[in-house]
Length: 199
Length: 254
Image 1 (cartoon, chains in turn purple, green):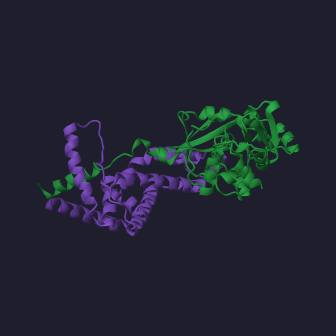
Image 2: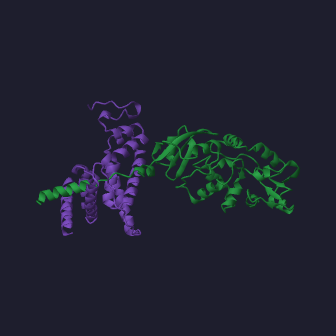
């Protein structure tokens, strides 16, 4: 299975080409096509994380655009070996988290005018209008509660239960030990339940 | 409700907070590109949600764009309205441009160049004067050399005062070819320049113009008078054309 020989001159040095996921295969073939593939595969996880970290749809769009643009510019300078070794999802989310932290830091120094956030729409085509309304209400409240968590707990909870990442990958993204990820997640969930209970 | 089911419900609700990126978001990140014929041969044009950002020969375009702009480049389903005709025949005023990332000076230069109609040319000094920097003639040349959107910002319509084509990113011969395709005969301008004629005036309208101004081209031979400077034409009783505004160039050339 993992005895690929690469695809000729350019990536001859990349071992185990056949084992790579479609995103990395595409990136090794053509940067722009690979980017389109990468965007398609990870737009949802990056946007969801950005939305639940920032709490605002407009910010989430800016963060997502900035993350993918930074990723593209970095990839343009990467050789085939580095691309083959990349864990695209964890790498993108690391860029997102850095971008978000920079953005928060800038905002602390220079607060923006307070804009009311329009409701966030996540439409499931199999869902009835009543279901959407119920879920919407619960979801909006929960999204607000997420914003009350300390930064590191929010990041761990969002990556674990919204983005659905395994603990090991969250440890890579946040650059903390797996045990710390677990404790941030469980403290975050506990806090969410408490916050939910007092309402 | 037990602790476990409450926990499960919370996790389920968190899972439902996932949301897909809006459909248009990719076009805020990536540029799209098309190829089209032009007087320079086959060219490629990249555009964003703001407008056309980059035009260069089709060959080697993607690498060029990556180096210069650093945005993903994806094929376009169809070109923006008016782009293909604009590249073909130079009527480009309706095509939106994405000039983000340029200096204020370069943007001013490019927008001034955009006002030169098809079939006409202006000297470098005229652009410098138009943007309020009459001494920055060389800087205008440099700004035009870095024009990201040739043909759409018609930098080929800016030439030397003596009718020489001047610099062009694709070479002087290409510049003359594009101008000829637009109906500008540089050889005639050079003949006039050899006779020290840089402006043409009409004794029926009393107006003095650049020789390629559409008002000057309508003057019949019997009523046409050549001048070396706008000052001399004014001394002879002519007023500068309000369309091609030759006074500005005069100030810069002086």
